[in-house]
Image 1 (tube, rainbow, N blue to C red):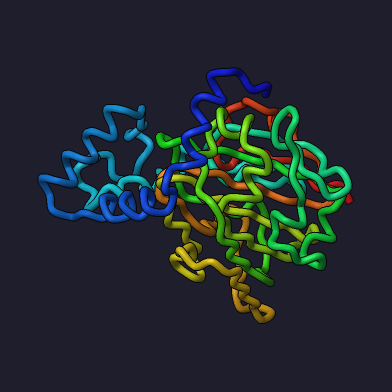
Image 2 (image 1 turned 45 degrees about the vertical axis):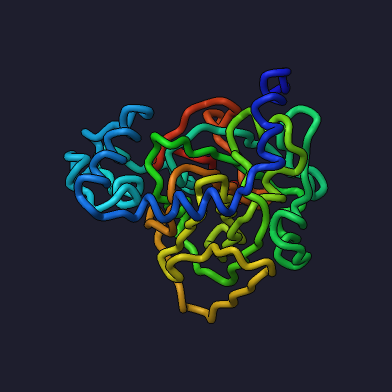
Length: 286
């Protein structure tokens, strides 16, 4: 991706906008349960975004108790079959590939002219970053119309979680191509797993309007706190199966999957491609 003048014009206001105040307001609006108001909000939202309600377990958009419940709706399992290739990892979300390639000496490619530090991305912990220094990564953007639950690419045991405070820049194309170190600047939750294929990490990156990142074991993680928070987990305390839900976003944002050098990304994981939960992310090559 190469930035245009239009990209700069669209992204520049985000430097001065009160990210957290806007997101706090959206958090409150998305949880209004008063029927006439929440139905109006859901209808207005649906008119702006093409939401495929026939894929949802509950197809009536007004049957949801709030806009947030509508955002985080469950899908019919048959709509997202899981790839069954041997040693394959699943794409964890619906979305579009921002970038997916090798990590070069601890640097991740963001867009033409921009990269960022793996160590900064994971919160400055060298031990947690070490397995991925020359590994592989996939950055997948979830748009407002997408399914907003996040699933496990492979079964794993949670070892550590870090909440890293930061800005809430938009993660749309125009900011990805213009804002340096975007994913290492935004608020994020880094989750580290031990799997049968070695270490794996999932970074849940927040964005403007996305002030509510949750995991299934902790609940709401993100906050307006200004310091990093670390959570260690005992062996066997949190074990999730391949394809199981591990978290969710309020509105859309970005997931970054980190894998070791022995993981080969699938050809479909190419920048700009739309992807679906359950398709092949790549294959572990022992």
